[in-house]
View 1 (cartoon, rainbow over the protein chains, first blue to last red):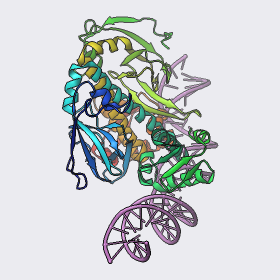
View 2 (spheres, rainbow over the protein chains, first blue to last red):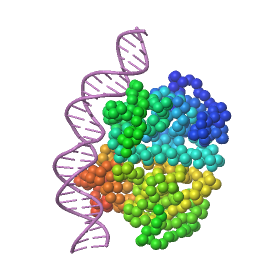
View 3 (cartoon, helix red, strand yellow):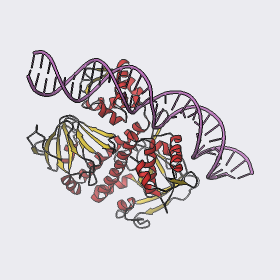
Length: 232
Length: 232
DNA sequence: CGAGAACTTGAGATAGCTCAACGAAGGTGG
DNA sequence: CCACCTTCGTTGAGCTATCTCAAGTTCTCG
């Protein structure tokens, strides 16, 4: 882990809260570290590069600066379940226990900021606000996982795809358009479907005029209300 | 919520850590509250009684004393996904935010201990060990949810049932036998299957000699190794 | 002992999967 | 800048794991 990628020689170390102020009031790293003075390092990974493996010791906590990351579990025969996609601004790899419980990999070229888990733990041990924030971030991941269990256990393929599109629209739409960083297989592994089923659902939504394409991964939602209706 | 059930008139209020010491070193409530002197109340619910609803304000945190509880989400047409079963000793209903994100109901007659969420929050605000424990409990729920997403998204029916049996065996087997508190429909709603598929899988395991029944809910695992092999 | 709920089993239906072929797009080297 | 090549996405056809619907059986509890 943390083997420097060929294309990204520069490591950029910063004192968070001084050199790198929070982008917004909801910046997760800023909220934790702004008044603690933790050292953050920037790091880059290429598409498909593993950031950490399942059960690997959780030495760092990460925030996506640019790019996109998936967290996933594998079965021994290769079946994969992606538990979450991490987009710019998202924190990932935060663990309360000693090890990562999902693996993480960059799904496109990605830059992250990272801080040592130990330094966060130390800050949480002295500052109750930091401790509260760490709890809140884990609780937020839990909420997402609970919603996703409902999707995986009980929704139809079309409902899953509709939920996915609304989630991505909320998280990464710019000017009414979203540029999906992930391929159809990744979407399928997130939704518990095959890539073909995802493709067919998207084609059907396209033919119904609910969404428009400009390239397979550039999607514009033309009727969010109908999409919400398709979601259960 | 908290309407007293007809069969359980006595409310038993205790000072946790004095009158009700932790049952074991791993007792969750004891670990939080043992040195904080929080007031806990005992309360009982009858089979199928709702303990709290989805999106209801999270006023209390609960621990199962006896019985069993399910936490679930519903879709508008009644499809249900159970996210977790809570068995004696388990804490449930702990939220970092203001509301419960799953509903909870007793699946058999159940007694719980409960403490006010506000008092836990207050304790966490002054005692960093309490804060750490709350985080760890939420992280533990997240771990379970992540494992369950893999099950719901990628495992076959037989693999799901095998996983379920091994989980229940671990959590409630006494003298090699487990007494399941939940019906086949609950198991199906936990595993993302129909009750018929659950029944067929159990029948198949029975006919293969991997488990034995004494009544539909009294199960003894006769070959854990073969069961683990059926789990992916 | 009787009635209702829970469970099992069977048979047919179907949503989503698998396998396969084709087409589009994007990156690379000439 | 073009042409190739690889990867990604789409679509079709048939298959199958699981669901649905239904009937019969067993268990529980009043």
